Length: 440
Ligand code: GDP
Ligand code: MG
Image (tube, rainbow, N blue to C red; front, side, top):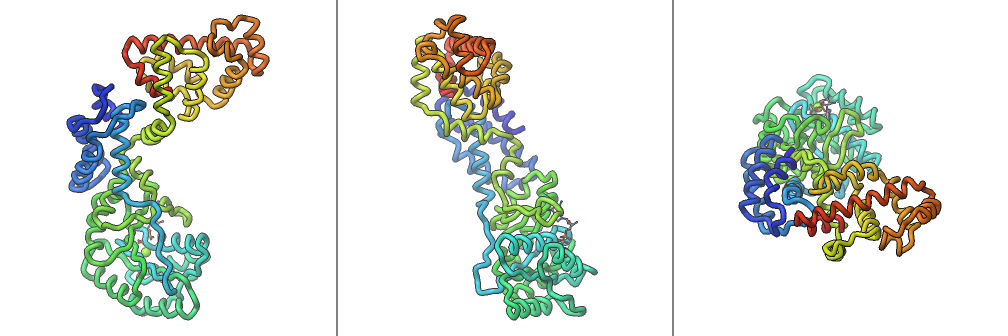
């Protein structure tokens, strides 16, 4: 994945204070490849990489994560920004009926999305919704919408044979006004390609119905084609937003990124299946994650930045520099780690502690942490400060007090010893500050 590759690029940078331009450029070459692999249009990728480079250069490196991880986070945040807000709502706050016109190519998911939106507006927003199909090109297209309408319990305009799309739109407007509908959804016809006839029809319908929202529906699986479609539509009509369908498929997300920059309009919804409730508000974070294929790096960096108190880390580092690492320190670490989501994951990431991953993995689940905490709090302050006073008799007392067994107390003490040893080894390696920052 991209994050693996970036970690590779940055391995040689450990211990540096800030990201230099050369470091960042090396990483951004990888980012660019990843973007192109995710189907992002070349000019969009270029523009993005330049912007992200500017953001990353000169940033101080968090001591708790690798520079590679931090760059991934910067890139991720820049992607999210480029993808736009995730609070895009529909504007239905006008003199009724608020008209929402759906446009797009044939098969992009217009009719399905129309019904999904109708369901959402009527159920979630308690709107009185009317749907009308203006698709006279495809046989049974109007009937398809009527069937979906019955399924989601939303009215559809009665079908009258022989009317053209503008006439149907006019009739729908009248019905909506007369019968007090809040929202009118217009499902227009699509074509296989963007062409003049399609655009002319769309403009005529728009002129007749004055939509407050014109949503472009595009199939995210079509990648670069979707981008060209969006360009075609955006040049002809005033869009208010985009709906990306088939996000449940294996679209790599690149279309989403290009979409936003090509249309200048927010992606408002994502279609995630054929079912009528498979429509979600668009979440830029998810798409950014998909583009980067980076798993948990982002949340890790966020958690690290949130939970690690630098001052505590300095204190611990100073203590450890004197060769001291007692059970209170261990306890502090355990608490910190619990906040960061378990021991095993972190041990695997720490240089010098890889050998302990097994032991820590065992302690990694929440229950084990609770048990460790119980034993530690059954000790006296003196015992925690000087673990070597814990003899057999004290072990029995601690076990009883915490409801654990003596074997478990032994294991805890052994774990502490191992960690103390690891700390000493790390000190020799010169990585103490880094580790302390991690453990805080
Ligand atoms: P239209 O020609 O633009 O009106 O497209 P339709 O709404 O008729 O959809 C075409 C096909 O795509 C139908 O089989 C839908 O069930 C399917 N479809 C629409 N949206 C989605 C989606 O978000 N995910 C999946 N998996 N299928 C979808
Ligand atoms: Mg249709």
